[in-house]
Length: 640
Image 1 (cartoon, rainbow, N blue to C red):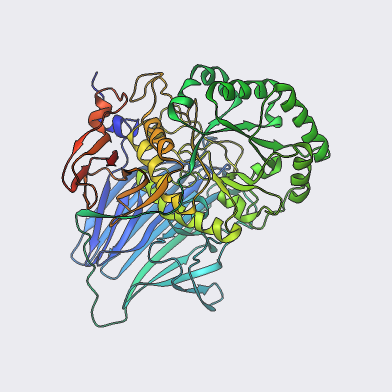
Image 2: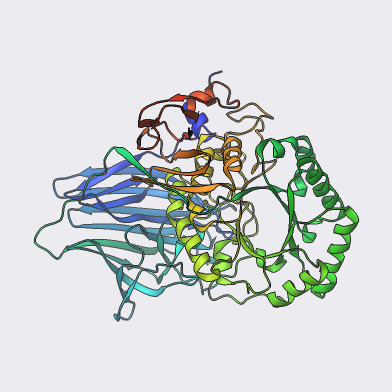
């Protein structure tokens, strides 16, 4: 049976909802699954999204079934009407009647929702996303519920708490001479800096986080909310928006520091598969094993002996990622763990510790759980593991590190992870997270200066859920927010995402970057029903092997004229090696001013390669300055 193109690109046959363009004059927006995406005026993005979303008690997105959808296109307006049913995990239904009206200078999104029985939710209502590119650090005017006006700026560095509360309207400059006002009605709105979770947006949402959640919408009671987006032209004419050239220009900046070492995560619940696949660590060239150890999950001496086996087989340095239960004096708990480590024979190159309570997020307005001071936890770790470099931070996401900043004086390095599907799991949103990831690393450097910095394990699928009781199961291989499996990890999309991640964080010069575990749904090896044969390396394995090969080299910063479409990075150690990833489903043409010399070698991970079996890719000669990257392809160019 021949694999479909969708399966090779995304690892799933699931089709994303089709986007329908709604237009009126110079105003346009994409209608996707009943919500609005990429609202533009005169070609310029005004809002990234206006969505009506319903979250279950664990912040998972409730399934939405749309019926009775109609679109009326008139001379002066486009009007959409539909009915949508949101279903909670317990079967309760929240029905919503929605109307969207698009005019030449305004857009109105109106929703009326009524539950069939008491409906438990963490949030039900509108979310408005402002883009961050060309908006971060720019002026904003906020009208509050009492009519008062606040003039400020969109945060540049990432705000840990809500930058604006009690919002009735937000006004910002879209382009010179054009302002956009977004007015909200029906509940209390506030803004969070969604870059905390690597979303490419500032999110203004309904219902303050300081209020209790989950909460209950009463059976039969109707709630009405509405959003109005208005355009105001200050000047006499609207400036023309320059069209992005179809060809992408590439420029190189050499001697930009050192590239990260590559780490691989190990998990005690994948012991048998990890033992089978241990040889892949040497083949990949990973320098570090990030070994997850959680006494609350029953990890003990057996897990540590397994980590020693893996270290002996791979030759890689070991970091123990250790949760500390903090139910007894922490010096006693860490001393017990240290005795088990010594008994196992495991040699630690470094140790990272985190109190167990910090695996769960503490939202704004919530009471922080009881926890020993981090200074005491770090001191106890140093006492139990003398001479072992100590890391701290969060084993979850930057959000939690930004809100609870680790005191760095005792730390040899600071660490955190990220995840791209906390709030949205569509292909575009996942690839747009790299816009925010740049600000994550900038913000870490602003907080911790030149302190050594490690990132990961970070994968598309969610390794843990700090915001609810569990991650979401995904047995059908769909695009699901907060899912513990994501089919794109297994396909070309995952390979492109992995390279783009490494390229995006390179400016921060993390000393270790971990973007995969060895086995399981976050791992290097294919399972049944994937684009490559079971037991063979997934496409991202080859990307990580390339990254490991050039790690420690002098970094070449690869700048492209369209970083939303193609990103890259490189290294020089005698020859120059450049790596590129296409972040889109369309072919992208690059112009390589330093890539056209005789003797260049080109290696591609693309649809044709994967269709041929996805074995170790082979290089071929490349001449000329032009190069085309197919959909979600990754390419390597070696320049003599």
